Figure 1: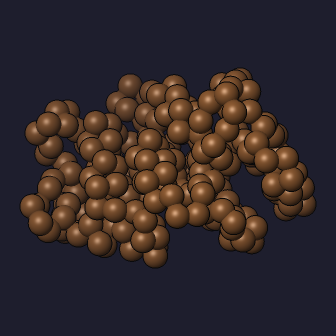
Figure 2: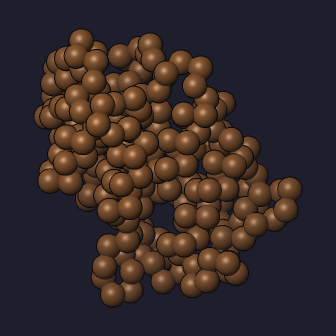
Length: 225
């Protein structure tokens, strides 16, 4: 597994790289936003650890440009303590997770392992057909009827999988928050709504008039199969 660490503070970057290599990961690094984006555009990474405050280009811009380019590698953003808006914005731009500074290295390594374990096994046959899309949840792959791969982030997969496991049942936003993000209190209902909107644009024939992921006002969402 290959991880890119984009962090401008040399001591922190060195510590992250050293410990990730000790865990057996192949690790690339950058202390500059522009260089970090260039590395993302020219290499295949299984995960990106991305600081927000970077010289050259912010982590927000890197995350946005990465997703716009169709790169769905999991992104964990490093945010300053107390900057709630940073965490929310990062998630809305397509980041899969965040961790606040100062953080426990063990916690970060655990989150990395969980995400890579769930999206790293391409041999699984846990498959579903939703609309015209063929989905393998464990392999984190989606293909359209023509066999073209549809880009989807790790967190989008987790939401869709929860809806699939509860298909034809209405699930609340609180259900999604607790089962997809756990006890992460910074994730808001608005964040859930934004993820649902992105999923609809990938699944529905007409996202403005959804037929597969339905909204029930003040109640939640239902995946209709």
